[in-house]
Amino acid sequence: MNHLYQPSQTSPAQLNPSQVQTVSSIDPYVVAALCRLIGQCVLLETTRGAIEGTIIDVKPDHVLLQLHSQKYGRQACVRIAEIVWTMPL
Image 1 (cartoon, rainbow, N blue to C red):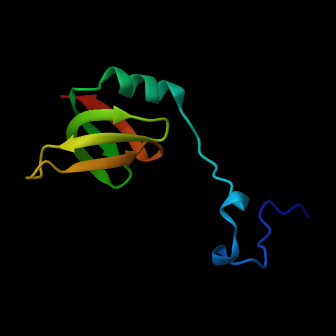
Image 2 (cartoon, helix red, strand yellow; image 1 turned 45 degrees about the horizontal axis):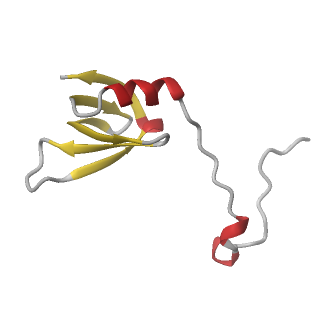
């Protein structure tokens, strides 16, 4: 039987940072589309619900929004992997 995941006997606290490997899926088309919307107001539907704001910055794994529904200039960092769809407002 081929096992994809084999738990180790090492706890996360015992790991050296150089031993940790981060795996992330990058969708270049979504990143490019979000980059074209920098400075614009958007509605992002995520797996946790909708969020509205102005796109401040886009990185390969997340988008930074200036929120409109919050006072005091709050910002949100949304993982691109959690975005279901995007609509410019």
